[in-house]
Length: 248
Image (tube, helix red, strand yellow):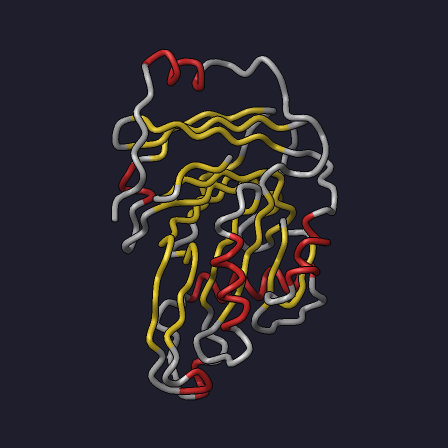
C-alpha cells in the first residue's frame, strides 16, 4: 500500500518552506510518541501490541512498534525484529530505565518507561512536560514530503530521526510462547535513519520517497530528539504520515 497522497498548491508548499515567523511554545509536545519494544516470543506482549493498534487511532498519540531479538533464543525468531531496534531498546533502558530491559517495554517521549500494556502509566508519562517543545509540519510534495521543524529555542544536541513504518502488519506465530496466535501490529518500524542535527531554531528539508518507502513501509515517523541514536534522549516533537493521514 502506498503512502497516503495529498495534493497541495504551490502556494501551500511555498508557505511551508518559507522562514518561520514564530517559534513553538515551551510545554508538552502536542504529539506524544509511545515507542513499544515487543517480541513475538513473549507471551506478555500481545496486550501491549493491541494497545498500540488502539493508540494509532488517537489524534495526539504516535505509537511506534519496535520488534526486538532478545527472546529469539527461546525457540521462535521474531520475523520483524532488527538489530538496530534491539540496540535502541538497550540504549533507552540505559538512559531512562536503570538498564532494565524487558518486554513489553514502552518509552514515552523519551522521558520515562513502563510496561507497554499499562495504558494508565502511558497516559501519566505523556503528561510529563518538555522543556523545549518542537513543532513539526509535513506537506506532500509530489512523490516526496517537505518538512519544517520549529524549536522553542535553539539547542546544540537535537537531531532528526526518520522511522519508516508499516501501518498494520499481521503475523502468524509458529512456535514459542505465542505459538498458534495471530498478532496484529501497528506502525511497525522498518528502519532507523539519522537525518542529522537541527542547527538553530528551525530546519526545513525534503524526504524522498526512496527514504521512507523502505522494506514495505507505507508511512513514516519523523522525530525531533535530543541525544544520538546511540544515546537517545527526550523527544521534543514528532510528525507522522501514513495511510491513515498526517499527524504533526
